[in-house]
Image: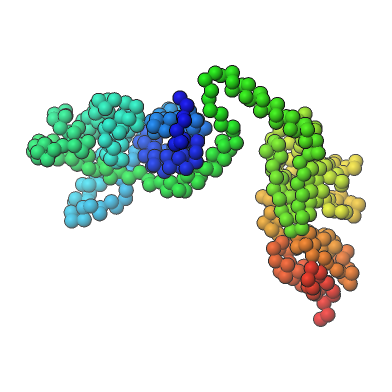
Length: 172
Length: 305
């Protein structure tokens, strides 16, 4: 329970390094839950404040899990739950420059809209795991550790998410 | 879902090349690949963590003030420690009966925080003392000599005592200026009660009370955010020239000799508290005066032209 290491979150350099490493991932996680950038940042900052307040009680090795759990709890306490619609970056066509005939662009636009809606319809548990894997590029083991789940549970959510998306977009 | 194991391994990025080849031949591969690939393009905003950390630090400032006690195994130890701290702190307050003093010299501005977290900013050549003996019993009272801007935290009655009069508030922002024959209170936020001799009145935001040459008056104006001197400027509104020069002496630590001009005439305007030349021009040109600077002495005379 006590933190006797020299690496201690009460020390500002350690705390700042911890912040720099995990703020982005934590904010994204909050975004997958609430669907609003500003609110996601608020939740993240609040969670980091809580960590600072309890720095003496948090083991550095558990701090990441603590961070994500705190965001989850803060989110559950926030009253407003809304549909989580994420947006594709506008004009994101760099990758497909060779395919830019109008028909393709229209199709792509339509597909993206369908996908956004389908992701919004996932359960929160499915969505956060699916997007942490897709957008943040995290492996199942890392997601499991971060969210304090078993790898099996993460896999289950992943396959449920994918099946649901496939079902919602039948004519790909 | 068909091929579930394969798909899961694929999303986790650990299919062997052979498995990948096999997977690519399954009928649903294209659909899954499209979903998986496009999902990657959902772009959450990138944080500028340097910036957001700075914002966070501001919030942490208020948290930092709390003493961080490593949780002991026995709960009672914590309370015992808290009790000791409380006793030490209060003894210190009682023993320090002389009170906290803040003083500013010429050209200085000083900021100080009172025990209740109220903020006071002192203008040049001013002093503030706190009557700490009575502070603990809920009687927030300070003595001011000079000019200061107060941001009072909400709570019990807060009194500023000056030789010219008393100012009382609950929680607000206001400026008090007491210089020789001049006494001015300017309310920026909340409500301020001013008492001078037998006179007593209430100021709303934007209102000022001014006492000069034996008469007090209430002046209404537009609500302002803070006094000009916090932005290193001195502003006057129909104030005798001698008081303007007094202020200039305090701001620049100089001596002004103006016996050759009528210092009873009124001046409206302002001067910079950082540039003496500019300050002298701002005052002298509109009044047709000229000035001469010799070391720390400024001679003012009527304009020859």
